[in-house]
Image 1: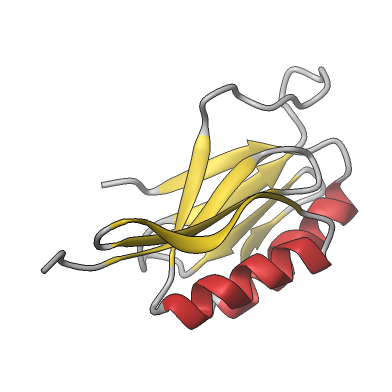
Image 2: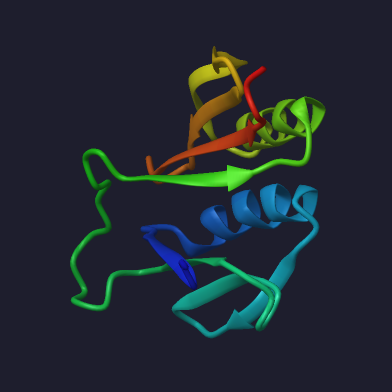
Length: 125
């Protein structure tokens, strides 16, 4: 249903390093790039994520209540994504753990303050 999400940045190089590392763990790389925009994902292969300076020329800011959720293949990958995020300038918003039966997640912010999570959803028994 979602084609891609775009997040704002005030430091393209810093943001690119963060998303290059996180997306590499997810098995995707850059699929589009210009001086202002970078997109990660697989062309025609599902949802992607983009990073850009705002079109209006104003500073990028964080949307209150906005979060991008990254689907992991298992709990170990949730941990790796979280660790990679923090090692690349991200900050913790909640360490990896079970949030409720069938939902395991870690929450973090990118270097610009955009909130993300890495999660695994399973069928509750």
